[in-house]
Length: 215
Image (cartoon, rainbow, N blue to C red; front, side):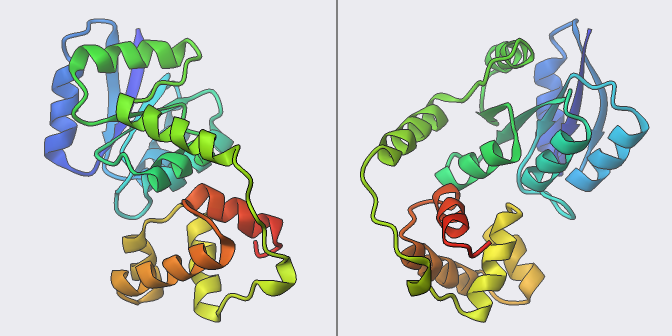
């Protein structure tokens, strides 16, 4: 029997996922939660879980932050991000956090079951559109890059605050709430940080920030 846990704050999406998995007799959904913090609490009580299906955008603790903590505390548990997002910043932040696979919510039941099996067997499954973005990113990392010397990079106090938030894998919306500013202001500051660090996505931004001693 494959023991599955689900972290998903939207009831409709959670029920849809449960219905997709109900067709498979070897899958048992042992518990569901509505955020990453609740998932950590349930794992502390019972971590006899083979795989967690993790949403990204959730209240209290998002899926990326929860994934990082779970991988530290329960390294045997596989984590599959299942989300509506296929943009590169979410993909690579999820990978950095330690997710094992990444599929979209509109994936058909048989493909989800196949992805679960492959992940438990040591594979790293991605929906096609996500795999394409990943390949494009890897190709881009092989091209020459010009790095600015650390002494030439200066972030404002607000930009440094946002950079710290980015290292935790927070979305723009959550950063805005944490810093009591608008999402538009967060977006503008992030664009400035991207330009200063000559980065094109969040994983590259964080790598360049580390290289330049900013985090």
